[in-house]
Amino acid sequence: EGEARPLKIGIFQDLVERVGGEMNLSKTQLRSALRLYTSSWRYLYGVKPGATRVDLDGNPCGELEEQHVEHARKQLEEAKARVQAQRAEQQAKKREAAAAAGEKEDAPRRERKPRPVARRKEGAERKPRADKPTTKAPRAPREEKHTPVSDISVLTVGQSLKVKAGNNAMDATVLEITKDGVRVQLNSGMSLIVRAEHLVF
Image (cartoon, rainbow, N blue to C red; front, side, top):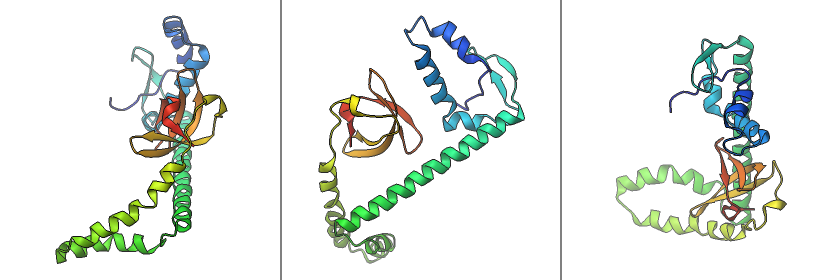
C-alpha cells in the first residue's frame, strides 16, 4: 500500500541470497519478478527527486541520483505512450469491426451522448430499450469468434491475445510463459499470471 519506494542498487543479489533457496525460485524468475515490479507505473511514479532508496527490510540506503530519476521519468512516458497507441489501435479495430458488421459507425456514437439527457427530460424510456438490442447484437458474434488457447506452447512472448474475465475478453500481451500459466500485461499496464483456460485468440 502507499507509494512504492526506489530499491537499493544491487538488491537483486540480496534477493537471491534471501529467498532463492527458500522458495525454489530460479535467478531468472527472481530477475523477471524484479524487472516487472520496477517497470510498473506505481514504482516509476515513486522514483522522484529527494526519494530515498530502501533495502529488502525497508531501511534507507541513500538518495536517488538525478540520472536515475530522469531514466524513470522517460520509462513512464514511454509506457504511457505505448498504452495510448494500443488504445488508439483498438479503437480503430473496433470501428473497422463495427463497419464490417453493418453498424453505422458515427451515428450511434453521436446520438448516445445527447439522447439520454433529452429522453430523461421528455420521460420517454421506450427508445433506450429499443437501442440496447442493436448495440448488443453485433457483440454476440464477436465473442463466438474467440478461439480458446488449448496449448500454451503455441504462445510466444509479445503475442497479442485476450484474457477472459466473466463475459468479457480484455486485450493483453504475453510477457512470459511459465509452468503455472502465462504472464500477460493488460492495456491498463497491469500484469498478471493467467491459466490457459482463461486465454483466447
